[in-house]
Image (cartoon, rainbow, N blue to C red; front, side, top):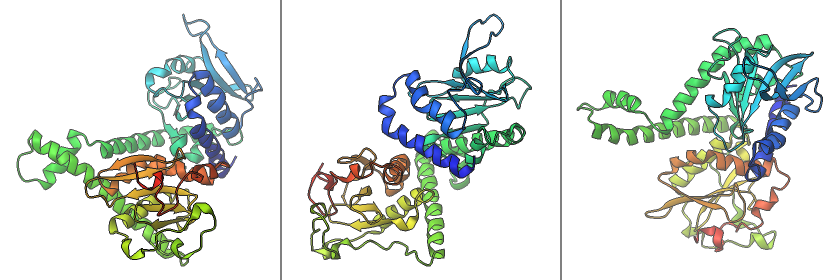
Length: 393
């Protein structure tokens, strides 16, 4: 199974998860709707063949009799992977892995998976032979899949299972993953240690607790702005390298005749519409967020008096997000990951768009993955209209 087919299959399950998550409330529903399809479609094992996948696998462990693990996956009659499932609403922790620990030592399995249907944590025995590690070497989220990890997921599949390759890469993956999560946590909510480290290098006075709290906000803002600048620079470089791409060139729908009642004419006073640097900055951020999944040339904008609309394929029926940045005191966005009239989210600065990455990507996925993509926009007002979607909250 190639990496390309693996990511395609992951995307299918991710799209199902987005559309059905509210209805998946029990552990059994999580198994049936998400985990079994993952084992079958992504990993390629026949969940209905007990010679490949054994549900409710039983192995007596010491004084523990009759305990069951959710799934045991076999290759050539030998158990290779153990899978323990929790319901999707549960946040995974090492406390959920107690049965995996016990079963790991009494079976031939060298790989153990803990999942809630959305997040997958994959363990091995790299620290001590035949004893499952306390930390996973591979962690991935179906709704925010890191494509760098897709080849590692593919190694677990029936077609490409390579235990030696998995184990040789496990230690490096474990530490890289932990460091990335540590960095992400520091960026999201800087710790005292990180804030004091930065403060000591730029502030000449004494770092009292009041100063630390002041610099905590400054550190978080500086990190967010640095990331935004780096992403914007890389995107602009990539677009400049593409002869057919035009950076920050807006769509011009005002000069075209409306093609349907939905696409009614926007106000003709174009002179009253001023596209600001902040709106363009937001446009580049959204393009950068979608760049790994959507060709940046497909993302365009239309500026109106009420809001700045960012669209897919220059299509009013495919709104990705609307920026309301011209208010004197309140800035907010409207996202459409749940369709209909959209949902409002207040912003501090335009850089806060990075706090809504999942919503922006989920909306784009509705158009690129789902056959129901047109459902979102049937109730969305075109740019310049005065309906509820135009900023009248």
